[in-house]
Length: 258
Image (cartoon, rainbow, N blue to C red; front, side, top):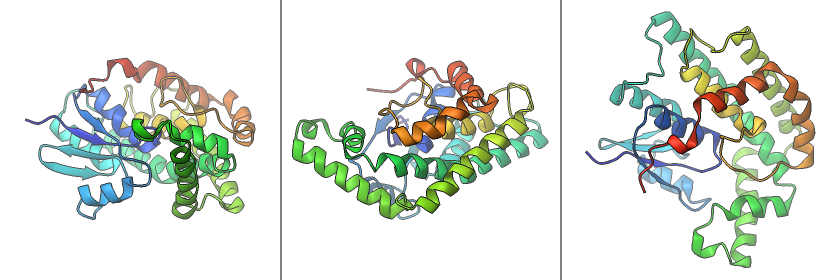
């Protein structure tokens, strides 16, 4: 059988969700990352028009888009180290929480980070240079062009220039911390007594705000975003994300093929 292939974006929290699931299950796989901006065309091509975003997983001849569908396929193909609880009620709750954080946290977290990042051209250049093909990273014109293209792309794609949208995103991130802490209620896990898809999803999608060292590498946040993050650091939910990454996300154990 051919190794699974994950098409991903290095800094994407939805891609991190899929990477984490593969690592949790110990699935050896290959990774491919297209040039920024081309990823939507690649995703459309890979999925025959069904998806226009990453991650996308090629598994046993199937092409699966969307991080939730990817985890579902991995659960079916690699049942060991399960992420879905066996108990039906717990499984239903875990999937409901996965959906909540997918819809009510992920998009708003992304918008907020891009909103502040695109105000700083130097930050955008540092951010995009690692996404360029190696042969282009020393080209000043390529670096500057990639930065301008990225800012324009996320402005059109996600509406990150809107101050109103950014304020709503802040409210949504805080509300997601409220929900996280309410669901945990002082416990280690969101559902039952072990790590599930609910824990993985919440932690992965909070990573751009919490920035745990085990998460994807990204440039230092702009000052305005740091001001938003600062009062969150004392929250139990923030500390839970840090601890969940520390306990369950060891990048050096990932079985990624060369």
